Image (tube, rainbow over all chains, first blue to last red; front, side, top):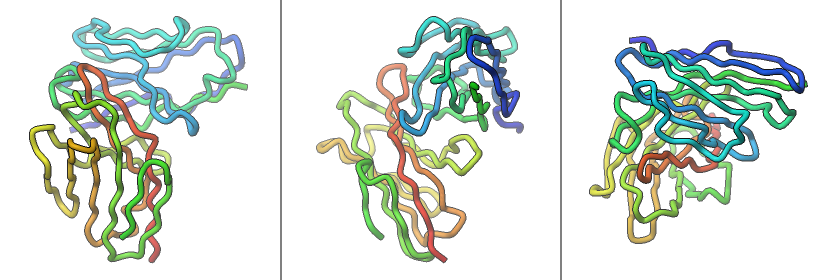
Length: 115
Length: 110
């Protein structure tokens, strides 16, 4: 069974640009969550999608947005990139939404660097 | 092995020794806890989980202990191997959100 797949693995952008990251969950998983990981802040929750609906959102500005498609694949978009957006962006999937006592399974992330 | 909390982000152990990684959580309403292992260049990998109605759960070479009285979670790794070198995170689930600790970096000395 394939794991969570994130593309691209690495991305370099400049300030002011926008970026779209993609996540394919484990087959059959309908919940997808996104996290930002930085050395200083650890794993910070961005948002969770289940059945194409955003269920929960973390404390990030509106420049961060996402969506989920009918096949459960998800994309995350960041507009007007800032230097502080440099981070590892992780996607995690699970069968059911958070709160159902099931672990999330993570992809290997997209390393985003802003110049 | 030594036991550390989140205030001590690194732990070094001799190969073959037991490791204990500790985690303090904040919300007494948290009902589900997970330990993850993250190797360099990879995403967090699920190790073991425990529900709040349990105080101990064992896996292969790993044991998680939950003390709800003091809101403390620990991960014990038996016979630590070089492949266990990684950053270990605890996560608590409260309501519909995961909250992650900052992690403990485990180094296994051959």
